[in-house]
Length: 224
Image 1 (tube, rainbow, N blue to C red):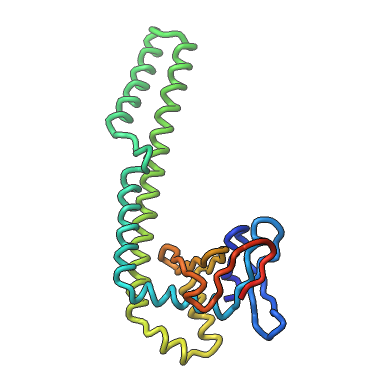
Image 2 (tube, one colour):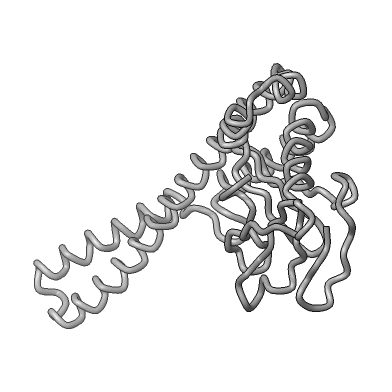
């Protein structure tokens, strides 16, 4: 789990320590936001990561919920965001035509250079803003499609993977490689853990689901 355990308050990697009883723990050693996060055992965090992998591979209801969430994000991206969508093509073409006519009037001597400069700058700003909005909407749509595709790939892999048998038969190095390939991070928060599997949204895991104690935070944390 080294390099994958993150404090959910300060967003920095947690440090490894020994609790004095031969048990490895991860603790946040950074003063500030992460200082009140309790120490969490390596075993519990590992169980959380494996639970996240099992759920993504076996829980059909969870998979469908994730698909619905990703499809909502994909529709939102295609529409250009919740608040501001991509500029309609007709509006962009109308502004471009206005700028073309403005240049013609300038060449014909019907407006002063000062008027031309001011109006051209105004139209150009609006055109650039619309084009930038369209580029961002297109990029967001591509990214949303890529996220949805990657989720289907990882879900299929985990469905076909007999994770528990493979894990039991694997050497320590092979287990580490498996985690490196599949798990992006385990984020430790005061009330729960967030398991991020590559290609999937984060999954919330309660401490008690993986043999850890629920901890009420009151200062520098101890804990399991």
